[in-house]
Amino acid sequence: MAWVVLAYSGGLDTSIILKWLQDTYGCEVVTFTADLGQGEELEPARAKAEQMGVKEIYIDDLREEFVRDYVFPMFRANAVYEGEYLLGTSIARPLIAKRQIEIAREVGADAVCHGATGKGNDQARSVRFELGYYGLKPDVKVIAPWREWDLNSRTKLIAYAEEAGIPVAQSKRQEAPYSMDANLLHISYEGNALEDPMVGYTEDIFTRSVAPEDAPDAPTFLDIDFEGGDPVAINGERMSPATMLTALNKYGGDNGIGRLDIVESRFVGMKSRGVYETPGGTILLRARRGVESVCLDRGEMHLKDELMPRYAELIYNGFWFSPEREMLQAAIDTCAKNVNGTVRVKLFKGNVDVVGRESAQTLYNAKLSTFEEDDGAYDQKDAAGFIKLQALRLRTLGTQRGPPA
Image (cartoon, rainbow, N blue to C red; front, side, top):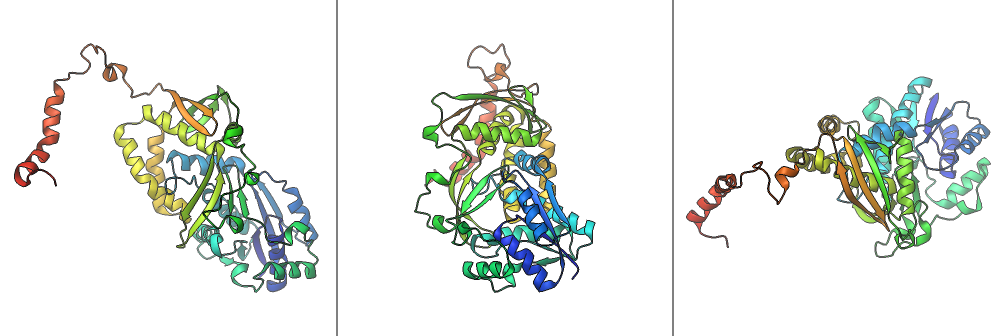
């Protein structure tokens, strides 16, 4: 095997994997580090890869592509998994897989490699990566070291690192209290200290939000403009997709918005407890529903709400590149063309409330909705026939079977 493209963070685990690939397969390793807005300095990953003899090093800023082509299309569906989770980890995997396969083609690599353990909660990460790889390059060889090697404990990993001359920080010599995964949409905390769902998290784990009770005592108001279903401006200032989400994260974090503690159903069959911070995404979801309420017809809205759980499940399970996700996306995007307008949201101590909405394409007609004189826009007498027709089957049933038990 000549070349392998490794999804590389520069941390201890992927540094060990890099060395293990060199030792086990005798291959040239190409490292790929994606900047998805995780908030970490990525240049140290380059230095570590160079120290380990890597000649081809990719560090790609994918923040705009991530938000524009993955986060925003997902939010057009108002996608929420199991009623709560905003899919922050799930939506990042297809982009990483896509770029990894692109690099493999560029350098003529024989295989790709990821660092997901395939154990416990991390099985979902492994599934998502590999479904992405195979969906984009059916004949690709996938190397998953955690399924091959015998370095199945922290002690063995550290011993291997020391023997290979890989520096091990003191903080890495013991099991972390929980695992973290971050990108521009969210940050997650899972495992270890959080595995008992009855044990509450501690305040010190959070990095993107203040506690709601510590948020400002005065509300923050935002006017968010939407075009084609996507947010384009805050308080009149137009922004790129990544800049928009960054700004919403700041507003949300400052107001204690977007914290979530859930137990979710993994694709592989287990239950998993996770704690999440998704400040900007929480604002965006509420704002989108607000502008949709005046822009979309009842039939459009209700059908989209029926399709959403299936769409969210596809993303959660790793099927971004599946034909059924693309079919649903086409319908969702057609609907989103009519979502244009402005929503006013109120942010206050962990809550997001829609307090105003307007659109040049609004379907809200005050003359039809008013309780006052409507100048003949709506004839109340029409309701009698409408109600009788709707009640026809109920009356027939009642006559034949009697009243319900």
